Image (cartoon, rainbow, N blue to C red; front, side, top):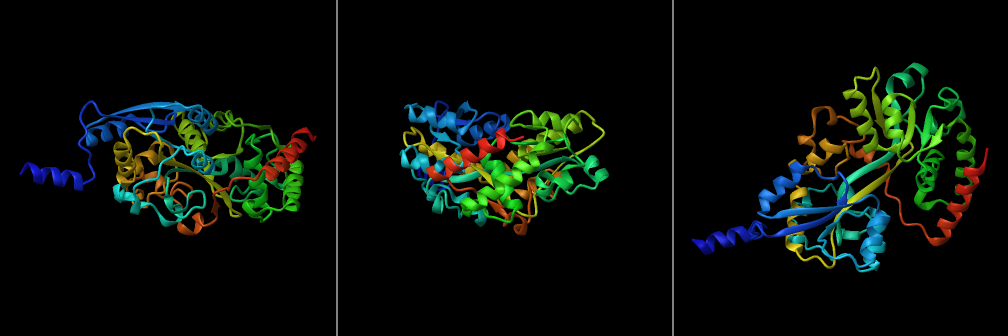
Length: 354
């Protein structure tokens, strides 16, 4: 009987972890709820210890400097190729991740990691438009197009109430979408056209903002922002809890959007890759994956998660998009050094222009 139980346990993918077994995770701050961690600890019979970083650059610098002791990390898609070149990640054993089949095919076929050799997507964020629903309806401004950010005719109605990210890559990508161009295939002429669009729109914007736009949108000081969908979700929650006399909306743009992908990966020096594989498989269960969406409003790559979303999120066009909507979303590729220099030069031209 004991041999039979051992065989069943191993076949189920559960490690024989004891109370002293620990999974060390290096993660984004606030990414996992305490409830998710407790559920996994109960499932694996282990402890989870987390350390946190604020951006990919901080994470990469620490790992490249030789930081040890972490089993898992959650890199964004655009740094994965750099991490594999530096041999920071180990290949996944798909046989230990049966729930990988729950990931929607559109999110498994990405150029940044063909075949999901090293990573599995976990949190998706759309660079899009967040807006004051009542104000834009009153003014007759359409947030479903990038014209709300770049067309002077629309901007005249909301001048001084618009912010955009202080990020050359994000703003140029949005401008290229507005022009009907693919940001991953933009020529130098396309980039110049995008620069000119940005320069014409800039006088109508209140600020370039990477942080304050969430609060400013939630209290009503701005009406439109180019930013991240997860931030707009939080702004909407804050406005609702504060009982503001308006709602914060977030919709994709008809011309297309940039999709940011955070992934789960196992570090090359992981001491407990067995527990890391278990955690990845656990987070690809639909019910567990849905907890992330309900926590932070992230679009979810796990196809089996949507039945467990909060009722008000099931029809959200960004959080739970239709396949047709998702087809217009693009994961940006890594820029070449020449492209980075060109963008940096044009971004400087935008910033110093009046």
